[in-house]
Length: 316
Image 1 (cartoon, rainbow, N blue to C red):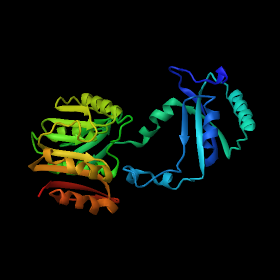
Image 2 (image 1 turned 120 degrees about the vertical axis):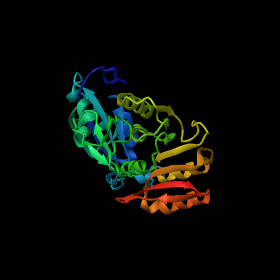
Image 3 (image 1 turned 135 degrees about the vertical axis):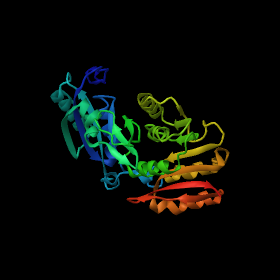
Image 4 (image 1 turned 180 degrees about the vertical axis):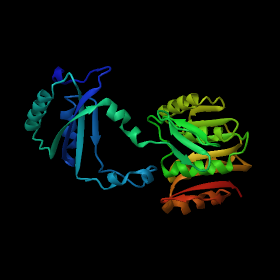
């Protein structure tokens, strides 16, 4: 392999060029091998094996569901010091030698801040429920009397307050959070639900996520909020959670994961415990409710928004 086309550590480089090559799906492996000669840091787009039956099927974007499954793309990102014409000439030569026939080749100039910050333009303060206002950390906001401000920088974690699943469960939090209650957040993401519960008067809050990056982001958001009653940690659903009754449990996940969690809830549910579950598309709601009822729980609330529903559950 030509050493001139190996990837390296480019430190603080912020200007990049994307080379994106698209081929027929059967040629993806060969394309990947050739593109790796330019850089080992590859972005591969292959939607041929998207499966709605996976635990994340409910959250798959419609544009991905409708994507052409007969083609696939591989991208490399070149720092400013790399010669784009040289890399293109190298790739074209390798394509010819290997018999690859790309459907499309694209070259796009990219700035790193565009990757990291472009989405921020669409994330604005949002009122959720009657009192809570989710405010991006970089935005100025003039609070109205009675507002509870939750400042968030979600980073790479799920949970900005803009998605229906999050809004639904925050609305339930306003109803079911009692002063001093012990709260558990399963799959905390950005930590938004634990922070909201604390703002609403909860006592000790325990926030867990399987993703270490989410735990780090949640910890930073908790620290930036100045809250000392929220403890963040890593756990695969309930495996790392202390087995004790909680007053309030939040699980903003997806239907399949909630179904997997229900059989293990009993040690955490007291007679007055309220569990708030969200991330459930309406088509799966009856299935989830039936599972709760099978394990001895009853549905006490069910708000709905734009094809999503959340459930408030107690022991029957």
